[in-house]
Image (tube, rainbow, N blue to C red; front, side):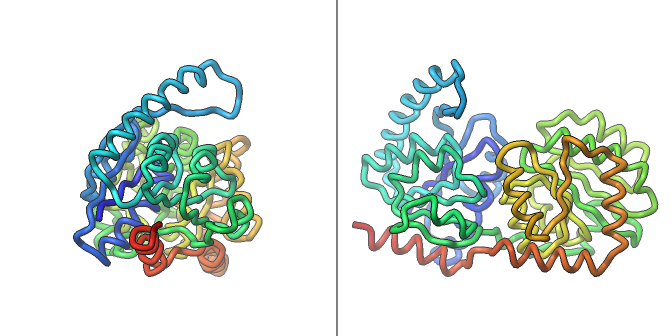
Length: 360
């Protein structure tokens, strides 16, 4: 069997698909995987490190607002469609799987024309344009949130939860201390701005450092696509601040040693936080992440920080208040775990088997 995954540009649509690949590989080690991603996105390194061959195809982005770029991107989508068509003829995959991203759209359209089974996974609170464009051709659509069931065809939509890579459960706290240079018994904060990093989160964290000395140690994943001057400058002056641009296999250890996680608002990251029942401060970027985090915060499952009004002093105060309240930390971890269900491996395997072997 051969399965083609697609998606990229950010790591949002990538991490759940890697979890799907991991779950099915355990069931059938002979399964082959291919990944179609973006040329300049952050996903290639992560996908290749998972042992999955990576290729790129031309793709365009359809914006929901008027833009001259939409005209040019129509031609990119057409080119991508024909590239996808011949790619699929050559590879003859048994299944196409996507969790969104515009690189997936022409691929899934071409796959529909060739009669290849398709699985679409919807993560975010708001359904993205790419998934809307692919949904009519999908054979099954899975959703993370129960409320999204009503936004797709009832006949083919299933509430699954979010697939999470098993490797995030394999972190080791003592190993993490050595990897990240943790030398004290102070609480540890793990900060991540998502797959591409976040300039705003980086700024807030650097601004907060001076107020957090003596209260914690900080592991900061800044993102290699973001300017590094601020974080590199801070790391020279504060020994408790440990800065890294990119992780390959260290994510599980960062989670394992963390007493508190500060993250963006993508459901890929939130699902990992929930699976590990970690208390979290979420700083969403404008757009769909605001809706994601609003839902989580209103459920009392995480602390919401608005990047438009927050500064480093405010972030530091929230961190110190939370670190000093063990009862609230435990409550937040337990609550986010209940609000964001994790997809079961056996359900993932069942979906793939039904699509591939029972497809008509």
